[in-house]
Length: 228
Length: 323
Image 1 (cartoon, rainbow over the protein chains, first blue to last red):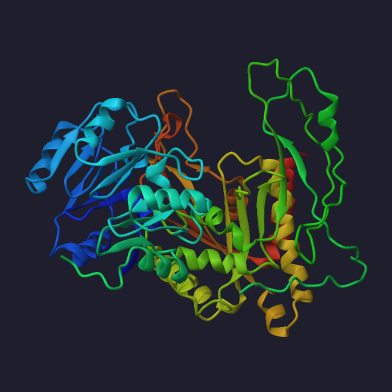
Image 2: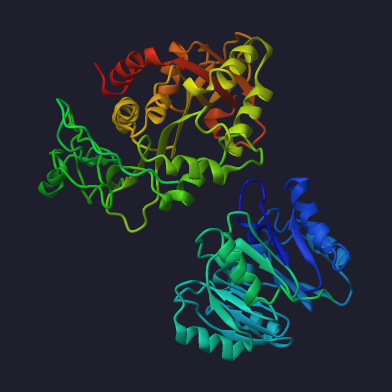
């Protein structure tokens, strides 16, 4: 089921949080309401970790990860890195890498098997990800920030509303999940900033309309989803 | 809930009310001038507002600042034509960003509030750049009748917030305005980007108060007409208050700094003619510019009688346009 919430009157919750099948990262400094919404949905299943990255609250846009690992930008401090390593289960590989493009959340979109990356991503980073996932350098509706304009899980994906049918088909074939073009937060095209999703639940900004919410629940197959 | 655009009455005030654009530069005056920039000088073009049954009143220009767009200068000159529009549902995201900190950092139904403002097309103005690819609002101004919208959650939350932050001596006046007198009170909402040219302010407020008085005659039902006969306006805004405002200290330079810096120049006039006002502490994080290090951002609430508005309009004109 998809839940609507806000972070300090801001509906761009995908900026302040990161959700995967194995953990959830949340920014420090939001109201208790923000955490408690996550904790009530997720606490029984995955750890919800409060953190900052590079001293900032935009954790969702700076890091990228899935159930196997978490990739952090070079601007992450040692304390933050240690805190994350301590708070997350041992099987999750937490790594900081030297990548010129430090907003990894905007440059990389991934699920547990495949990743879409920014066309200018460093070769080393691509290889690092490529050890674990299948990597595709792509653009979405002409935008190179693939991490911003699409959100996908192992069950489905939502992309920028101006994505053409051909691109949608190509993405669905490459990534082996069904894709749909749509919006969140009442017409916002920056999908990944407005929502976070994993295999059994999703969170969207509170401006998201009922129509958008039903599209999200249907493409990510949340209605019949059972938590693992 | 969008209002049907009202038809203007035919009468002495007649003529359709088109809106006109303001050519304003936000740049420094350069020595050379280009002839092409004089295109926008004469502001009597009458343009129709797209998709609306009626349009804004044409406003005549007086002393236009000499326009210049010399590329040879080191300073960048930007030419900007601002236009006044009725609020539209499409303006949702832009207006929401402008009103982000309206109630400090409290979590409230901001989206509902923005919907309310955009739904009231008869009174309210949004300033945008004319013919820009994205139509981001640069400013929004409106007056909402507290009684008419009292059932809306956002209005209730605003009322509760204001009562909570008010001080004892004005709480009673405030509650009177908010509860019993609500149907005669207009909440004046005015927000804009920091660097909006001040020359836009007199026409902006003229437009607002003119629309209010037209609405008292043009609205389709008597109830609506009555709802715009405001007896007073309630204003919630922000100012910079000197940290040592309560003590009268002189700085080391020997000059005393102003106790209050008004972010919006019209707030100073409003406070002067207000029936009462109070300030309250804000909790939002403030970005401290070097010049403002001795000041802290403070909330200010004031009530202004509607019959003082002509004084306000006169003083605003003389403040901005000069003697």
